[in-house]
Every structure is written in C-alpha cells, then in structure tokens.
Length: 207
Image (cartoon, rainbow, N blue to C red):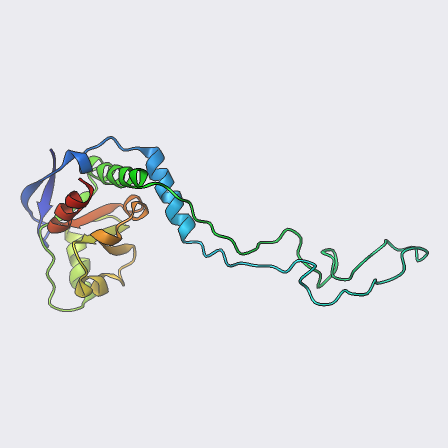
C-alpha cells in the first residue's frame, strides 16, 4: 500500500494515509495519459470558425472583362480568391475536434496520473478544510503553510462554495471535485492538494 503524509490546515503533520496500490501505485502509462490530455484539449475547441468560399461571397456574377484581346489575364469572377473581397480558398469551416477514447484507457490514464503524483511526492493530503466565510486570505495562508507550488489543484469530495469562491482569485489555483477531476488538471499542477475524504472517494470510484 502506498503511504502519504496527512497534514492539517496549519501545515502540520497529523498522521499517515494508506492508499490503494491499484489506484495510486501503478506504473504510469504515458501513452494513455497522452491520449487523455489530447482528448481533453480537443474538447475545449469550439470548432465554430468559418470563412466564405467564392460560391458564398455576394457578387461576382458578371465576367470582369472579355476572355481575349485586352492584354490582361483571363478572369471569370471578381469573387475569386485572388481578388479583394473575394472568397477564401481552403479556409476553415465548422467542424468537430472531438477525440474519442474508450473507458478502459480513460481509467488507466486517471490511475496513471494519480500514481505519478504520488511517486513524485506532489500529492498533499489535508485532513479537513474549514473556513467560516468567503475570504481569500485564509486559503492563501493555508497553501503557503503547506508549501504548495505555483500551480495548485485542490480536490474536494463534494461542492463547497466557500472554498471555491475563496480560492478562485488566487493565481494558479484550481478547485475541483472528485466528479469533475480530469487527467489534464492533475498533470498540469505542481501540487496536488486532496482532502482526506476526497482521496477515499477517488479510491472507491477507480478501484
């Protein structure tokens, strides 16, 4: 069983937590993680960009000048791509960028990302986070005591508006629940701060 240190809000060690090797102790699969990240980033693209082709630009019905005898290059329309106000050749059109990966690869990628954070000692388990009001300073102070990195991901077992709204103004800090956790967010952070009950919930979901 993989073991990680548990801290309190003051950054002091309280106990140790045993984590399931089947979730937090596997050999990370780089290919699966790469596919998961590519799929996530592709899903962020809207794919709504569009340009008008020569058939969609208004005008250009009449031939600019006769075919022969003028000394100029032959032209069939003032809406050809080489003309000002003409259509765009080979421009972007609405499309879907979605990259599908199967469930087994998704699960393997998530387990690999979690295991890589434990192996790199970048996972910090906190026994509980309790704040009385929505205020940035207490959360910033807690992260400072925990000695987190520039990019920090806080994982909660369930939605908590006080923590979310208190942390959203801190640069480089993201708050996620177990249900919204993704491989990209895990790999893109320097410090992976997880509540104790959230760590147990992750085990239940992915074990």
